[in-house]
Image (cartoon, rainbow, N blue to C red; front, side, top):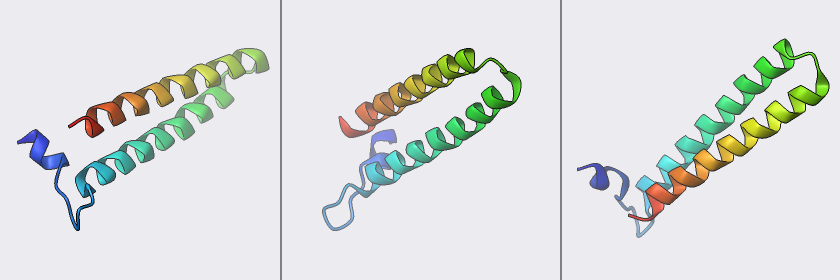
Length: 74
């Protein structure tokens, strides 16, 4: 049942997978904005803030890649 939720097509386009991928990208973008604001508000040291922001971006890109791998290997 879960597989059918994400694999429906419209005019031969995998619309379920496209919409789910867009939802994950939107979620990651929203998370980036929120965590970036937290780092900017509460971490005064520029170097530490840069490291934390870089780790956050890497983590979010990894999450997006993992979600795309799950969605598109069906």
